[in-house]
Image (cartoon, rainbow, N blue to C red; front, side, top):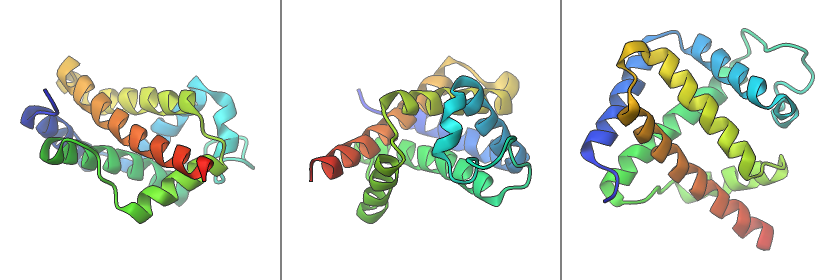
Length: 157
């Protein structure tokens, strides 16, 4: 069936809504959830490695979280328009390379997905529903699949 106009709208509209909110706070929440789900993941993020707590005002933490939200939103748009996620080749190569270097494996993508969905759910409050969850989940899964494919290609090279 593919990604629908409605799914794309759900992701885009909720992202627009979230951007009106406190992005640093959402970013902090996103990483708090990642570490709550998988405490060992802390060592995979250079900006968290040497800290015993989440840095409240760490610009790298905010930038990384916003990148995950934004790229998931962009993948939703691409899924509807092209039927696949098309990240710029250099960006995808970089993402594959950095995730491979950090030792990211399939279960880590699931942790990030869970944290992402829970963060969006909390941000959206009563507007959150199963359709929105499915739309964000599918958009993230397709983005993760594109990154994993690049990781496998680099590992095989």
